[in-house]
Image 1 (cartoon, one colour):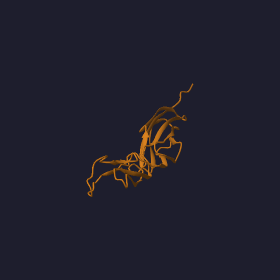
Image 2 (cartoon, rainbow, N blue to C red):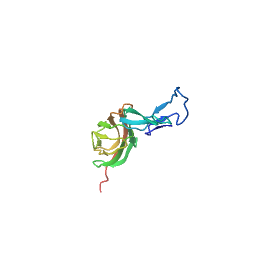
Image 3 (cartoon, helix red, strand yellow):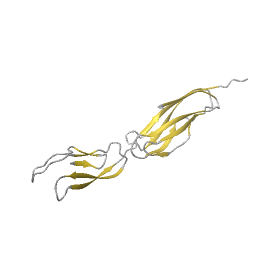
Image 4 (cartoon, rainbow, N blue to C red):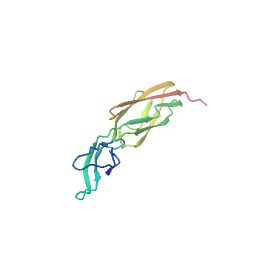
Length: 173
């Protein structure tokens, strides 16, 4: 009987018979899916009817390099109509859906009417950050900008969020 003492180890054979003196190949699969970065230790246990060694533990290790993965929601921010010299704030949710710490190193707005509440932060795996983004126009008209989020996500180091809003003159009463 062959069994692994961990959820990331799999043997292709769990039982069988081996004649005297020959050997039996057993394929062991190491699966790092959904594991965070780090070192993992386990034992492959081989149980038999051998009177000298009824159970043998074979120590194994797995070194996992995690990856940070950024997810941004929503993908676009529409602030609607805002009075000149007024402010509307929307939330942008940034989530680390990876298996290693996500470092957001900078956030930049391409337009001065769109203001970001933070400039850098870190997120553990499965952690989210609620980012305040404000639209504070000082002149009337349709406004558009891009918020760029810079991170250590190797596949997506720059994420762009389109921001739009229309500034209108407040009624004079």
